[in-house]
Length: 148
Length: 151
Image 1 (tube, rainbow over the protein chains, first blue to last red):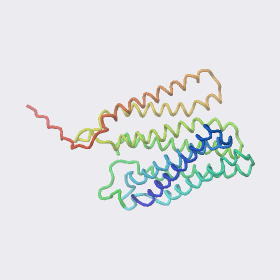
Image 2 (tube, rainbow over the protein chains, first blue to last red):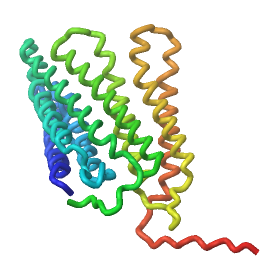
Image 3 (cartoon, rainbow over the protein chains, first blue to last red):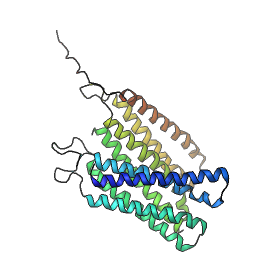
Image 4 (cartoon, rainbow over the protein chains, first blue to last red):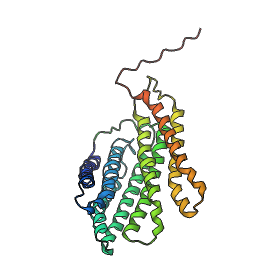
């Protein structure tokens, strides 16, 4: 497995752990009524799980095992993959931090990082689609392996 | 990668781009409230990403990569997966359109869409499971089918 795919998959695993920490807290709060503010973490839990874990894992595995782009550049332009990795995780981190803060203290300046997070995440997804699209194709080229 | 997998994966990528864009609009509006009606895109965002993207890419990759049925490389009845592809995407399209249509024109006729969507999803799942069930196999050597002898 080449380094970029390893970064995607390992970071996805970290988000999985983080998601279940947050999800566990939300569930504990539902049962024990610790603090009503914890309920604001529910959308964070969903997005850590579905974006940070599931989508990022799919991206990492697709970048690793989809047919090569070409003999010379089996992964295509890796810079797009790195752009996707950076913006996806930065956007998700911003969301996980500022979505609950904005719910607790709805001041306009706490909303701006949410808007920035939205832009970062959508740019990440578009970059991934552009990167992987040409690799959704038939038979791989002879002599190019998936292991690097 | 077979043609049907390419089609499913590419369609999943289209739903991913659309679902992420609608999600970004909803989040953007949450942080900087400018257009309150953008909230109507929240459920379409969920349908596009959960079913259009995640379920469909899983089906497309499974169809490509699960063991074949014989040494000729047969994947079994592909028409079942074509049916799944059509039903699943019709369901996602209805899921994406329902809330905006209700918001634009609250006609009673739209009430038929959620149960129809549910039926399409169920049909898609049923067809996919029927196709893929015999391909979930223990590792074994595939016997090459005997040649037909013409008398």
